[in-house]
Image (cartoon, rainbow, N blue to C red; front, side):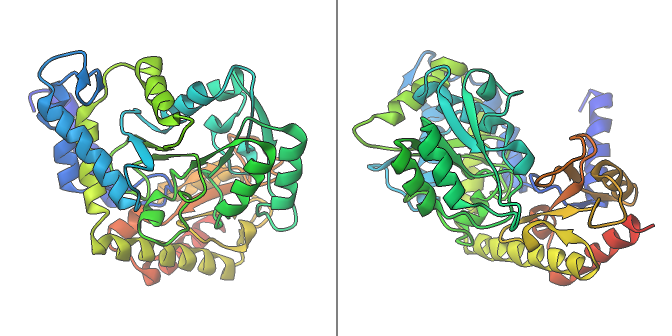
Length: 390
């Protein structure tokens, strides 16, 4: 590379990634093939529109790429093209979620999403997000006793508030979600059911977490977490007389963005094929085993794990009340100094500020990609304990 400054930054970042233990629950490591597709000549092509309906010439090969990505997405999650549509063009998870709002809702409509403080995402209606500025969030949270979803309470809120859409799927909830119960709640309120499976998509693909597809109207996901692809997003839309698929496509383009990043689409297609391999199922199983080992060892060492454990790749650890009284920000900083990367995170019913909350969030996906097993995560837990108890 002729640009020596950027070349150095790339070299430095590569070195940084190699020497740290990465427990960021929303990060992973892509294959060389994914990187090659992401940096390919598809970067040069402008492809505004959809396959066979482009506004520019020269897209015959691009159309094949996008159609292949769609076909692989359907195959991976055991779906058929007569019942499900896939949009591959949203640039990331937040734009994908916004497209759902724009396509299905009118400004001011009520949206029922989990409170950010309890594990929801900004785009599930939080006030600082566009989804909270143009639509009205009806928040739901967790049981103060179990720190898990209380479906009875969810049902009561939905019946009382009558939201237009209910969002299931979270950014910091470690437990299994009962999609069937969410479907029943949505039906009782006359609401759409949107599932955001961004964190658990790889576990669903690997058959280590229940699939939401039998119950959801729309499923969104990022592609760079447990799915182990590039940064990007997919929107799955159930096909029926409501023609939600057409509404979603129009919301993505021309509603919210112009031409898609076809190099990104190509890289997503590569990752989707990789996730169909038998080795990926073994990977997904190991991700859960490693998370269980990490949470279990930390618990043995005296740390309070939110909800008592994990059913997925992530967990929340209370370092304030359950530790030596340090904030999540300080805990994150201490761990980074010894090469363990985590993120500070609020815990349910947190009384501390967002920039220095009571907890940290840990994930097992990235280090499992590097080949670590349960014994390695037990050692990591002991390192974390040693550093935070100083």
